[in-house]
Picture 1 (cartoon, rainbow over the protein chains, first blue to last red):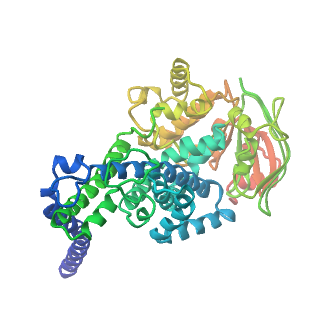
Picture 2 (spheres, rainbow over the protein chains, first blue to last red):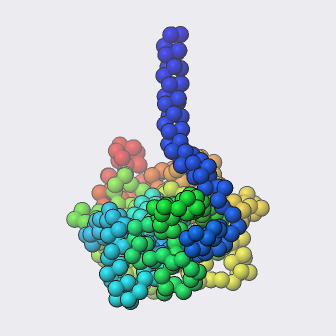
Picture 3 (cartoon, chains in turn green, brown):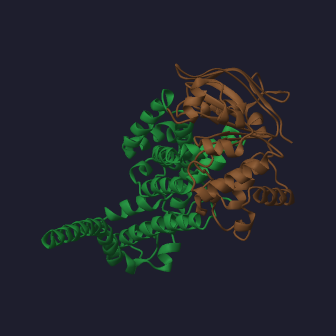
Length: 283
Length: 252
């Protein structure tokens, strides 16, 4: 009796310890990356770094203000394309296209998810940049928006499928049209999961560099015109990191730290807003 | 006031499986009609044909006619209009999880375009009172989620939600089978009061429940309506041998 009790207690403790160790191992790389970024970059983050455009080589000072703004513009365009299309396709897959054509869309989304980002960049370069004859924030937004679609689609589909069918029946049974039931009841029931998927997609493309090389192109100066070559944080980090100048290396570290903070900050703020009900609508 | 429903030669299928065979039944206005029978006999399918919920299942199909007063339920009437006039309460309470109590009751009206705040307030209070839930929730209307109520309260919330769109008929698919005896008692009391203003059709597994609440009772077996009579008659002197076997517990 007693010995079997101790054995079970020991097994329980060991299983708990193993799970806790796994959790720590998951967090460890994140803490390490963030810690090292803070160590290398924090000292270079100054007001000037956040608000000024780069200075020419040899001059000290300058910053990544234009790249921060450029990334903001590009991500705004990307979200404006990727979020509605992704959510719309996800709704279609979950509510209407459970087989046949739906399977084709599902397969296409999975393939698109697996396409290397640089290939998406080249495609947009050929289809938009070449046609327009210039690099632009718009083309970069299109490239990143395309990359957001499959993630948003599949995650939206998954969380909608988790909404029990009895909720759909309740809506239809009240004489509410199907589309209204889908949008105002089913989607609303799953909204926190949908937002999680959107944030995942956003965080993923926010750090993308490859597709920006031949779409946004980069810019050493301030530019607010989305139809012109635009600076972006990942691009700037890349250019500075491979440069031979110590000052630029320091700024690259600082840029990487700012990028991480902006991504984590955006995701955190959207989640906070969602949990406070701001995005659930007041109706 | 309630309006009667008349089903004529109703046949229903799930894919190639036929679930109803030639069911004809008149459910009188302002009466409670109970439908009893063993599991899988088609009683849920039957009431789901009355408000066109059956066809929402992929591959499901209906033939025959159903009339609500002068309204043809099939033959060109939009399903949403039928469902507004024939409300439904399901077996498992299914409040909308992300909506407050108030929004749950108002959902059918709001999502069909009613925006008048005073009118909404008035209907929400009236239907919650009708469903005997008002006193328990009136202080938490907008703060508490519908899903946070107890099972019995959730089911009464669902009844209020169905009544809020002002239907003429209320279909109830085993509305108390997931509830404890006290909540069941409340729902039954409620059904008794509802027939003053609505026609009620209730599917139940529980024969005592049918005997307690229903004026008329229909017995289904293997997709066919075997016997349809005044409740008292069916439970005391059924004319069909199979009905007698079922209510005396010989099968089912």
